[in-house]
Image (cartoon, rainbow, N blue to C red; front, side, top):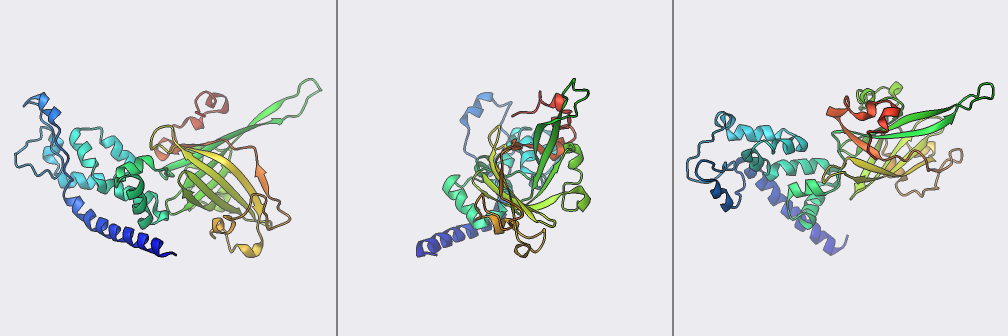
Amino acid sequence: MTREAVSDRNYYTVKLVVELETAARLRASHFIFPQRPWLDLYGINVRPVPPFGSTSSKQFVDPALIHRVLPDELLFEIFSRMDPYTLGRAACVCRKWRYTIRNPVFWRSACLKAWQIAGVVENYKVLQLKYDGSWRKMWLLRPRIRTDGIYVSRNTYIRAGVAEWKISNPVHIVCYYRYMRFYPSGRFLYKNSSQKVKDVAKYLNFHASKADCVFRGNYTQSEDKVEAALLYPGTRPTVLRFRLRLRGTTQGANNRMDLLALLTSGVNDNEVNGPDEDILGIVERWEEDETHNPDVPAISHKRGLTPFVFVPFEEVETSVLNLPVEKMDYYVPG
């Protein structure tokens, strides 16, 4: 490591210590917002709600019953237990809640959890260089793998049926799904099944049995690119590698993932110790046509590359992906 790199790392480490020391003080006092003169146009009957921790000396009586009964400290504690998407909905309730939820403490904890595999120092460096020191801006603009649901890819193909009396040539439309559930720790779960999302969501976790055919893997993220890999155990261990790209239908949604490449290749028995091994660290630098087992050729699949659609956990029962195939084609976005 060069002297400039060491100096740069020490600089951001010192900045991080200062940030951590001030985080506790931010929980007790809300940052002050600039004046908004246009609010005076409403007259004396409609006054702006002061933000949490305001230093104004004027006594203010909040007309809302919930604000008169619920202390600001307790309201702050409730918000601190919400996930970012629930905070966004709560910010639409009233002006006071919107001001309170803009506290950087909420967004700082959400960002450090979402990108925990990058490390605290690296996250703080990205915050200062790209997002002007705003944790909320970083949450909205930085590509992020969502962990509050499941990414689902629906794939179909046509299979020829059995001809009867040489009069008709029936065909069958076969539909199957790829399911991926990511965790902030850098691990993910994968299942390939014909079952609907409402059925798979019940057991797509680390407590799933072998009969559920849920496979574990590891992933890394660099900007909007995601590299993931898992191991299919058996007499001929096979590695399944994914190359994905994050995108969203709206800003900060991150509800789509394009499947750029799907690769399979073989590994030797002495290269892996078990299904829980970090298989991505073994095959990350492999070429697309590289395999370490001559019985398992390296294949770059060209079919079944339909983009992934994100389904939050609270919507798995009502998702359109549970509809029959003939009805689903009218609803599922591309």
